[in-house]
Length: 409
Image (cartoon, rainbow, N blue to C red; front, side, top):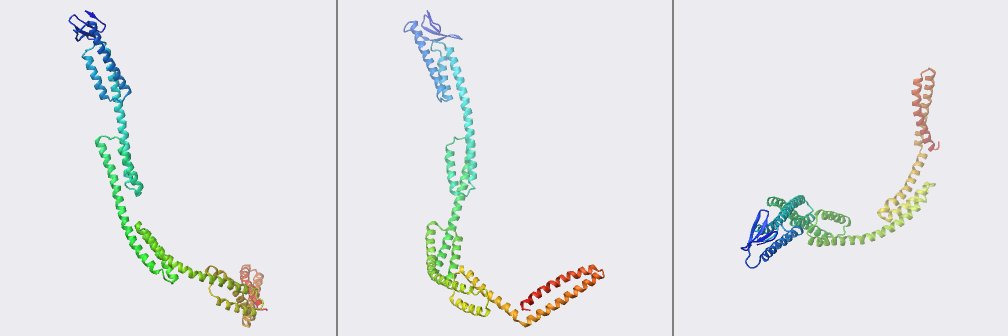
């Protein structure tokens, strides 16, 4: 009988392996020597060692799933437990137990990572749903529509959750998109209706504008065109294909009218500028009459100037107030001179002024006597009261004396 540290072969050719639980039958060997038998079964053991080593490296360096790793471990463990090899089977079991522990740790790690991933995916989808529900109320139709499409692509890239949670979130997400699409569809339907109404309104405005294009009633027609333009802006935009054509017709009709009016006005403006030049010459001639020294001659000269002025006609509107103001200033100076002369030579007015002055002088003299008498009697209160009255009468007297001087007396 021959023996080795981990196995032996008996006389009958039965091969045994030593384990912590005692010897276990490996198999029988009849084809050769006991050494050959042990060498054969030891090679099978070495094969298990290699297989376990490969599995250990796969577990450590690849993404081998815990399920597949466990199945591989159990497959090798069955071979070890069947002890059809010769070697340190207990060492193999320890390696397999250790590897099983590592696989279990990896299983828990992956489970935890998967839970974290699922939680992140859930939060990400909840964020997508919240944004979609906010966008559902938006009226930024293009931007919101593009953003919702981008959210769908983002959703597709996220992992699925448990069926119940995923279905609930997707239902909310889908409902938000549908609500937005429904509102957008209703908006553009209403917009189409408004644009059709605008088109019909603008057709009428164009027809009236074209009918007015040949008018020569410049003021009222120009005012009506301004009203038509206001109505045009208030009508809103028609469909794109109609808007440009309608506008070209509307604008073309106005251009015909305003071009014709412009030509007429250009002629009139040239005439009015010539009128202004002539009136400026007359104003300079009139202003040379100032200051008035000879009223009769100035009045006759101004009458001649004014007759020529009236015969000239209109000047440009922006110059009218300036040029007429200068002419009126000369006219007022002549009128003031006439009024002064009339007051100076009017005997009735002079008599009235003299009579009023005499009455005021008598009143002032009387008040002064009364003040002197009151003070002599020691009645200062009465004297003070009469003094205030005297101040008023004296002021009136001074004014009357000044007016009397204008009459030369």
